[in-house]
Image 1 (cartoon, rainbow, N blue to C red):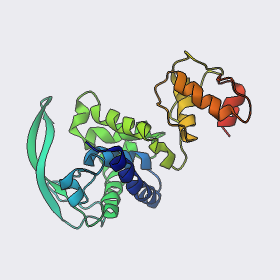
Image 2 (cartoon, rainbow, N blue to C red):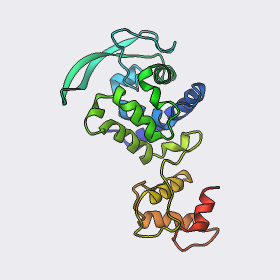
Image 3 (tube, rainbow, N blue to C red):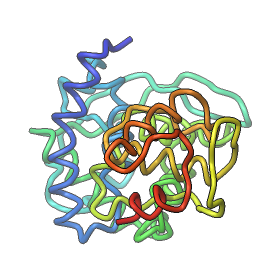
Length: 240
């Protein structure tokens, strides 16, 4: 299991590469999704086989050895992998793409998503959740098991506030409430928590207005007023 120091270091390494490649590919795929998939596939950069091959996305060679762009130079490595067959996991061996650098691996990842027709619905998705949910069914057989892959990627994005690397920082939640306080629940609270995280507050996006959310609201309100209630004035300030 990766330590917090390893997690932090890996995200800091991947983030500028993901942002750079997303821009190169027209920002059709969210950098947050790219970073989170790399975290998921490589165990935050601690999987020896993947790291030695710069293969942090776990992309298979494929029977046709198709080149989506020029970043992959036909290098590969063979390793065990879990696949879902007839609704059950089984261990198999397969060939995976190896790269000269993390930059090449990330470029090939974006090339694949932008070129392969099976990922078309992920391009220009309205938010990172829709993006990974469109990617996952063709990317990971684990998605067949209760959407476990996309849920894992979303959790990584939200746990480490990776949406801050997305160009427009799109809030995927809907704000309908004009007053929130201790005990409030729902999508509006998630909207609030997303905006607070975007402003640097380390809180979970769980849709529950608890003590940690109240504390973050109070800290955000310090220059205006401080009562721990999120009303119209705070909401307007967050949306600036």
